[in-house]
Image 1 (tube, one colour):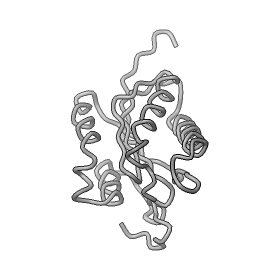
Image 2 (cartoon, one colour):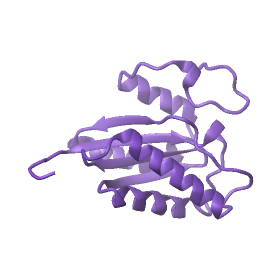
Image 3 (tube, helix red, strand yellow):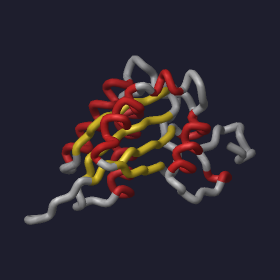
Image 4 (cartoon, helix red, strand yellow):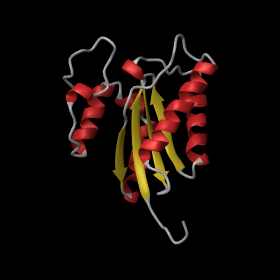
Length: 159
C-alpha cells in the first residue's frame, strides 16, 4: 500500500502440543531458518527467534497487509509439515492451539531481542507456563487458566 507507514513490533509465543519437549537442538536452527523465511516471504521482518524444546519466541516487525492470526496459521501449518515430512522428531509433531502476541515500542526492541536470545537462562529459573502467565499479566491480557498451554497429563489449569 502506497503511503502506508507503520512500526509494529510483535513478540509471538507458541508451544508444541501438550508442551512436549520435541524441538531438538540438532534441528532447531533449521526450524528457525525455515520460520524466518516464511515470515520474510510474506513481507514481514524477523527481528529475533529462539526456542526451547517445548516452545518458540519470535519478535517480528509486522506489515499491516496481513493479520497476526493468518501469519501464525501459516507458520504453524507449514512448519508442522516440514518437521513431519523430514521425520525430525519421533511420532507426529503438532503445535498447541493458540498463541500469545505482545506489542512493543521501538525503544523496547533491543530488550526484547536480548530476552528472546536468553531463553535458556530464563528457563533455568522458571517454567514456560510461569513465563507465559507473567507475560499475560504484565500486558494486562484477560485469560482463562483452563486454556493456558497444557501438558498431556495436566488436567488442572492452575498456573
